[in-house]
Length: 252
Image: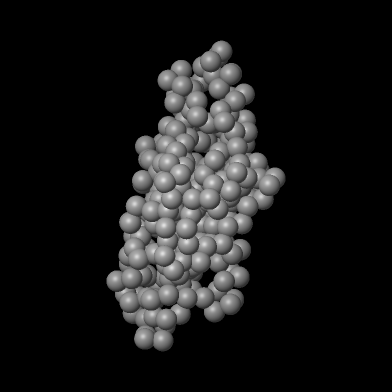
């Protein structure tokens, strides 16, 4: 996101190819697909005792995969919990699939897994999100897609306000033929995050944050829900004001 302003400027001057120059090991090419690991599928017939066991539905961020929350999932399982590692919709395959998606596509697997757990009798479900995963969870809670609200929600770096304000110009970038941002991933990021961020998906991400800011201004009430918000003031993507907006607008 921090490079989006420079990318926009270059795009206005030079334009850009509309093809994706996939590199070896990239997630974007669809040759290294990621997948969800879901409690509803792994343990579809829980006993009465297991129905009361805490199940955590974990949702990663924009352009990432379940790899992002694996350390948390490993720790939670070591504490006796079950964890559904949800792969967001249109993530983990090809960047061409991702380009066609919107935030509603990304959100659907979170809602589906929550409902699947409910239908199998699980009574103690918690939600854990990071970055855009948090925003998708909050939208689902505030719109009633996830109901009743769980007793516990943990939000790590919840994306309500994007730090780089140039993200709002992604639609203009797209109009001028600059179709994507190359994030140049390194280390563990290669193969676990998309290299390319299509301009259309950045626009959808901004739309999602605007929806949530409007709802927080009105106020979101989650009766009986304990909410933990963790936010670094040095986050390169999420403006720390996001936590303050949640503090003011989220009643739980």
